[in-house]
Amino acid sequence: RFDLRRVEPAELMKHLGRICATEKVEIEPEALALIARAAEGSVRDSLSLLDQAIAHGGPGRTIPAEEVRSMLGLADKARVIELFDRLMRGDVAAAIQNLQQQYDEGADPAQVLVEVAELVHLITRAKIAPDVPLSAAPPDEAKAAFDYAGKLSMAVLNRAWQILMKGVAETRESARPLAAADMVLVRLAYAADLPTPDEALRKLGFGAPDSGAPAARSADREPSGSPASASLKARGPYSAPNDSGGARAFAPQPSPAPASAPRATFEKFEDVVARAAAERDIQLKIMLERDVRLVTFERGRLEFSLAPGGSTHLPQALMRKLQDWTGERWVVALSSREGLPSIAEARAEAARERERGVAADPLVRAVLDRFPGAEIVAIRSPADAPEIAAPSGPDSADDIIYA
Image (cartoon, rainbow, N blue to C red; front, side, top):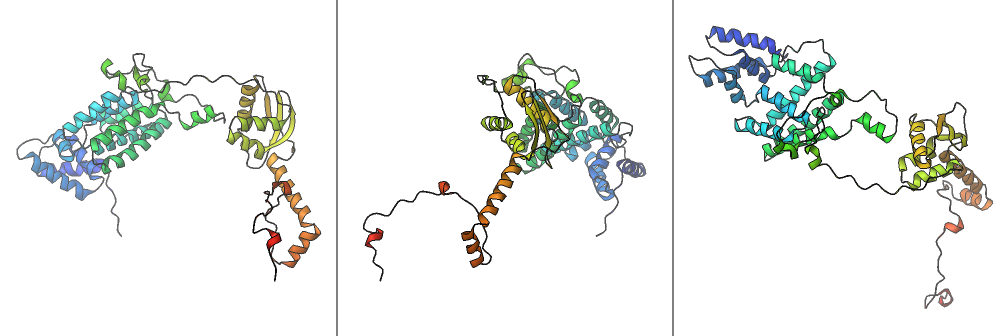
């Protein structure tokens, strides 16, 4: 296999421009840029597309960019930027209307999503390397990319990229591409209400580093759109709260606050584990049993060392839980001392000790010696054994005759 080197769009544009000058064909520079980008670095494909554009345009006239865009089924870049802006503001109605207009003018819905994804990629590049010019992009698109790079956080851009990539595949496979693309736009706009991973960790109390709110959420920009479309307006990453309706039309109503549970008092660490189980906080219960090697436990103070593999965020999460459950201030700290074995370690050691005791029993030892390869699989006390009823009826033991 021999892979040809891809040619940069700027170099392709110069090559196509020389061909047009030789052939005395007038074509707008933006049209050449569209052809170069659509060719994706292939000289052969770019020449084929240029031939189509010349044949489509006819002799004796300048080939406009709009005509090439229509021929390629591409979206208008200005409209793509406007569509992205509406999505980031949460203006779903305006975004769907924008897509409908592009569709009516011949744009492929999947290709529109691809163009939006390319804009997200440009914005991400501008955010990561603001000193590197986006030479392959048109000036207006490059300017927009740098503008959005200062307003949107990396988490928002990553999430938008993932939604668009999945949405492009869904739209191309759908029997109704426009409807599928509409749903992708709705998903992208309303995803702004979901917390980013670091925000989710902070809300769960596992101490993700608080680097401040994403830049996208701190920018102060007014949402656009008419009042008639307010019922389809989501809260975008940099949209202001919409008092006229907005996302409230679709936002779930908050459930009534549950009755506050009585304040708990903990006399020993096992009481804390039991409370976590009663609250159905299974993850916390497992971590308390597996990772905590207790050093000190008293009212308002808990010190422990971590078992190997334990989460260093556990003290902060546990402190919040204790304060919520007791209504008192707690100090939860990691200790450099070894501490007692964790509950899980103590259980495992007790099980091993019990197995050693059973294995030392003369009767069990005799069975193990009599059957080579036999091993103790489980140990059950008589209290755990199911009760077996005595046989009765015509098949009772008294009626059985042994020959």
